[in-house]
Image (cartoon, rainbow, N blue to C red):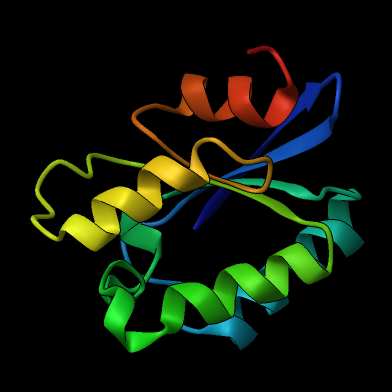
Length: 122
C-alpha cells in the first residue's frame, strides 16, 4: 500500500494505491480512515478499486452499505478509482450514479477525477 497526500481547498486528500484488498469490511475501512486522520489530519480518501473487496460491488452482501455508513457517520469522504463498466448489475450501476450526485462517495475513472471531486474543483 502506498499513500500520497494532496492539498486541496477542502483539506488534504489521501490517495491510496494497493494491488490487494485492504478494505474488506466496515472495521477495516474505519481503521484505515482513522489512521489517515490521526497521521495526516485527512478526511478525504481516494482509493483504487483493487484495494476494496469485490464484495463491496455485490450490493446484496451489504458490505458497501456498512462501509459507507461508517465513513459517513465519521464525516469521511471517499472516491473509488477504477473502471466500473465491467459490472452488469443494474442496481450497482444505479447506486454508482446516485452516489456520484452526492457529497460523500464517488466512483471515478482517474486519480485526477477523484481529486477534483474530493477537492471541490468541480
